[in-house]
Amino acid sequence: MALGIDETISGTLTLTHDLDTSSFTLVLPASETSVGAGDVIGTVRRSGFVTGGSFITVGSPLNQIRISSGPAPSTITLKMAKSAPTDAITGFTNSGFPNAVNRTYIITPGSTGFTAVMELHYLPSELNGNTEGPSLGLWRFNSATGHWENQGEDGFSTINHIVLKAGVTQFSPWTFNSTVPTAAELEGFTATSGG
Image (cartoon, rainbow, N blue to C red; front, side, top):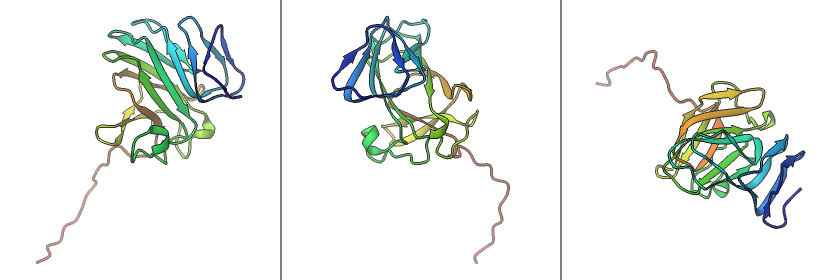
């Protein structure tokens, strides 16, 4: 199913299948929620965030954000694509991450100065060679450096296929990866004089 215009949900968004917003926006007001196993592919704008409040669903019931401190934004916009990050998806040059999980989230808050806890969802069929569990971390694209940076994880569920990250203060494109090493340990080396 796909949207043909911008839509505002009145009541519960029931996702029995994926919903593609195409070039339009699905608006979830403060009092609305979502249920079901489907995903919203495309753009969702959500309101109703309260500092210290509970998690709020953003599109899929398994994508949730909670504001832990600071002034809560009036809205957060989440755009999801079911593919690894590319320049076309993120809108940044040289932003591809071909060995990431086949899911990209672009999160844009309506304001700054707050700290959030995020739970982002993926499907096992999207792992793209990555492994579920504690090595599957969230990665954020830093537009200032032009690099993807491992943010790690503060919790995960291999049953619900989510990764949780607390203390989030910067927003931009996000994805998941477990295959890129973040550290290497040198066991030894040999040097020979060249004259």
